[in-house]
Image 1 (cartoon, helix red, strand yellow):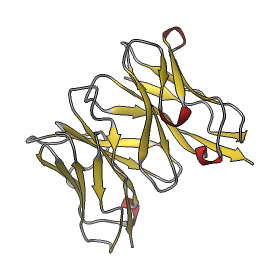
Image 2 (cartoon, chains in turn cyan, blue):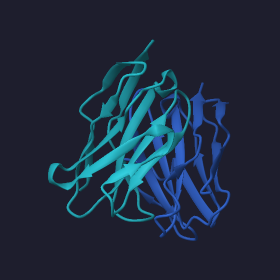
Image 3 (tube, one colour):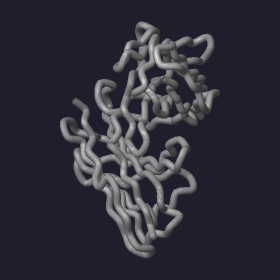
Image 4 (cartoon, chains in turn brown, yellow):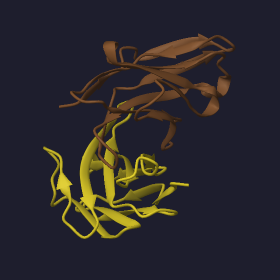
Amino acid sequence: AQSVTQPDIHITVSEGASLELRCNYSYGATPYLFWYVQSPGQGLQLLLKYFSGDTLVQGIKGFEAEFKRSQSSFNLRKPSVHWSDAAEYFCAVGQAAGNKLTFGGGTRVLVKP
Amino acid sequence: GAVVSQHPSRVICKSGTSVKIECRSLDFQATTMFWYRQFPKQSLMLMATSNEGSKATYEQGVEKDKFLINHASLTLSTLTVTSAHPEDSSFYICSAGTASPNYGYTFGSGTRLTVV
């Protein structure tokens, strides 16, 4: 069975500083990997996804993620955080196109002025 | 593209009544719809998967008679919470998928259900 671990429950970062959110997955084959962001009381917005090809994926809002098969990781990064990036971030894994997703526990990002 | 619309965004109902939540794919045909539930400060848990024209597949522990799912067309799926109780209060989110990796993986805006 597939699973996703986000080791950090909370992260506090200063505005303008860099951000890295960790995600480790467990899946036998090449996974479909996703990062979503959720603001309070809102749905999920897709930041980026990886299916195959270039292991460094560019997403929206200045985010990027790198797939590292050897480490079973798909960490999300942003060079310079804005106050509006304060939200909950979820990593997810799927088996194939159109298939269900398994989510990590989420990481709450707080941005200090 | 790949827009999913979910309604209502909030609903308050009395204990014992039923509530219907709609999920629509606006600009693509969704062969599969997924319904998730999210408790406060927790992650999303898949409740069920529905394919157009067939019965939904429920995850272990989810009562299929309480959470009725209908996927009558390629653009609409509904979740009906029957005989709602306060413990059913939660945030329900739908997602639509296709066989193409270029579509799907888009979520609705969610429905906050409060049962009083």
